Image (cartoon, helix red, strand yellow):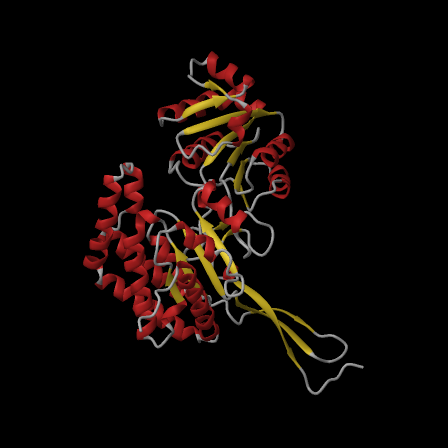
Length: 427
């Protein structure tokens, strides 16, 4: 008799069960054993350039046929240099401290028992992402180092690349004596598989979506599993009346222009009225020279018009728009308190910055802005796991529970209480 082929639902359920089983052994693995897997993976990546570029070419060819833009094709491409960079990133994660087993608190109640609060893996993490195949490696290695099994669901446009990369991770696991099902890729681009995955709350403990707002909202609205996410990156830079003009210009240009299509680039420039009177035209001129389209409120627009600088009048919608492009909205305010109110009203609680030489003003801004990452005299472009020294990131969270900001090894852990006794009984 022939066995009936598995349905899509059965395939996904089998994957989640296997991941849960694999997670038990991984949670107990010693740091040296996990690092051995990562070291092995780095070597395998370096030895598999031809295999990976061949798989990637299938995705690039399909992308060109579908008319993907040059920017999207670039995000999709796996070059020898990028593969070498991935291998180096894996080694950097291996060199990071292992968070599992770290004692983060201790209690000594009157009963005499010794209570220790200890970091432990979350268990099984589902990661849903688009476009960039390097995310497959970043997320897999962070989950492995933190003792978590992971289920990866990449975008359709990178399917062949993700399949090849995940196979190399599984090979490294097997060669080092681990259950290869600690890392699994959903083997289809059918969106119905995602719908099934999001209902497997018995075996999957956390979902991290990375991608556009549409994908993330679909995940949030359809998941019975806790989701850690951010929807948009509507980030603001506030130039205070006591800002250093040179620093203000350099950081504005970096935060908007260095890479405008990412979630930590600024979309709003908030500027103190007194600072604007002296320096807005210079900053706006620098932005226009860099190809930035300006959208300004009435007061800012009057200054720009007087200086002969082109702009469009800003609308209410502009303050809440994630352009992901060389477009910047400008809002004038009377003081830092008004800047904080504007950011809290229109921002997405991602990353915001103040430029000022006044420490009192800066600290009030840092306390008052309700975002996952707040800066003083630095560009918002640093909100990134690698730049934070986390090795990489599984994603960025603007949530309030469990994790906020770039999610590295510690954010992939929860905790348990380990209680040591000497025969104590409760009276």
